[in-house]
Image (cartoon, rainbow, N blue to C red; front, side):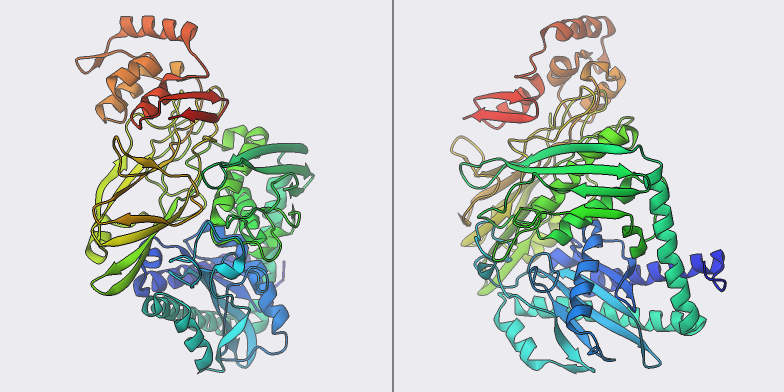
Length: 607
């Protein structure tokens, strides 16, 4: 530690930087135009030191946390010696500039103090539309990145304070929503300007030399904490494979495999064995998968590790080229987030073997992302939603419902806001009865969100998962319940693929229903406290018949019938069918599925 850096001052500086990143996040939330930014909060903010290393991250998307190092590497590589006071940079391309997919646009402002470069204010916002073949620029059915929208290498949006008018004209001509795109980018610039003022004040307070020394000490401190956390884990090698359902009407399983090796105070994550890149837009550029690794290390840590890039030094991440976790040009990647979310589940499957007391069962599998678009009153609209909120159970409690997936601090947009701004009516929004995986501790129920189209016509582009390969359970619990996407629920309903390889066309009066996957359970369902089962019946999470057939708890006149419950549980212990579990029969019968079998956590259905 530098002699001038006492622990109290380091803590003050660390928290000041973190507060600046959070202030940036608030500026964007309050000034953004698009609902995907303002309401869903699909964006991130951060600060980097003069060498481009992360030193703070705002309280938004956790899965963006590990993406800034690659982005800053591209910026500092391309503009070494050419970064000037008043410059603002913009970029998004995964292959040329460390981006993740084209809607995620970086706007970064270097911060100068007394003529010296001292740091960077960094923003990353999911723009509502960057062009391409699908409104919202997230078409699963794209087969190469050239179909996905406007690719931006690292370019100067402003040069010494002067706007790049040519760039602004190009941006405006390559989006379906120019006003909202421009408004969201202005929000990013405003956040950078806010951070610049605070950052300058901080550097000036301590002096450049002392501030730089403290930053180095904090990088070293983050490294030290991370190494201590890793050293406390057992040495060895563990692996886990999870599966994405696949693409289109006849999906082929897409494996994601992670192998974790711990040796002393170093940890390696090797993604060898994951699927080759695919002819669809779910290929995931490496920064997003790296983010999943960084997130998991922080989640299993016993103490808080500050967001200084030094914490990455003990980590090695192997991402074979040409795979779904590190695709080669020109692989499409607009819907890449599905792999990032599933990477978290895969890593949880590994660490459930290493530190079982710190890891729960799998949740809903990440955010489902439907994007609706059409024309209303002569104007184009695009609305993208981020739907999540069904956690798997932990070893000492039920999975939480209505809380974002750990990978992102995203929110489901308010019903009233959607209905006020778009020709869409939300008919249902809540939890699905008799959903989620049973266990001594049960997984959270699935979410239902049902939309009725009020405009003449609309297109839906979407990506989702966890219909065939259910959220995996632990310790004898049951896998979670599947995700479904249904047009016009009822006798003539159309069940969509999880990842349709075309836009779904809807007309006035049509209904689109999203049913999210329910989280998986932990422990034997017959060991669940009958009082908890009764509570779930009273809360209408499960029916009384479900309580009897799945948990062996008999509810009569609003109370547990203890003698009948003991007898019911004894019968279930003898007669349970692992391949046709009752909990799935309740769920699938309600959706009109005629027959099914369950092979571990893979469901096979016949309609």
